[in-house]
Amino acid sequence: SKLFGLDYSKGMLIEACKASNRCTFINADADCLPFREDKFDLIFSVNAIHFFNNKLKFIRNTSKILKRKGTLCIIEFDPHADSTDWYIYKYFSGSYKRDIERYPSFETMKEEMQNIGLQKICLGLIDKINTDKHNCSVLADHFLDQKGSSQMAMLNQKEYESGLNRI
Picture 1 (cartoon, rainbow, N blue to C red):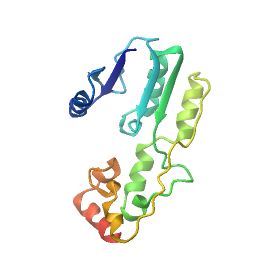
Picture 2: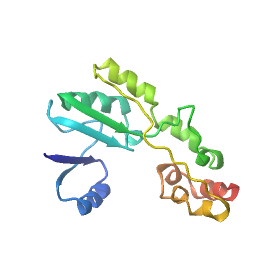
Picture 3: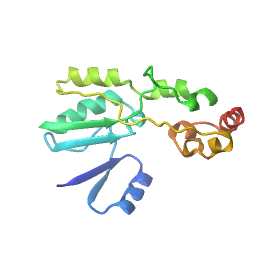
């Protein structure tokens, strides 16, 4: 099989090259995929779609470069879901509102997939983080590191420190 990795960030591509030499890495924008039609059996987007300028255009573009029986797999987080209850939103002001703007809902992505003719669309929860943390162990959670998630990285220093103080 031929493997390709695509990222807009040259820094991320450098890190990816360090991790694997089996993959051809390409610097490109998700809004303008540099591949011919009917090329791929499988396309994965893992925790990335919320960074794309035009999330639904990405889905449309991937449908063009997938082979007839190809698979598009988007692994992502949905802050729109009723079941979403993440403590980050409770303690770090503005993080939930920003995520609602950045992340398309699963239902929105599903509707787009249906509109462009993708079939056998399946939505499902594949992982839920269920760890109890008590006392100071809460502060060791990697999600609280300011570089531990995009939610934290988007906070300015005052917002970040204020959230930590609330915890």
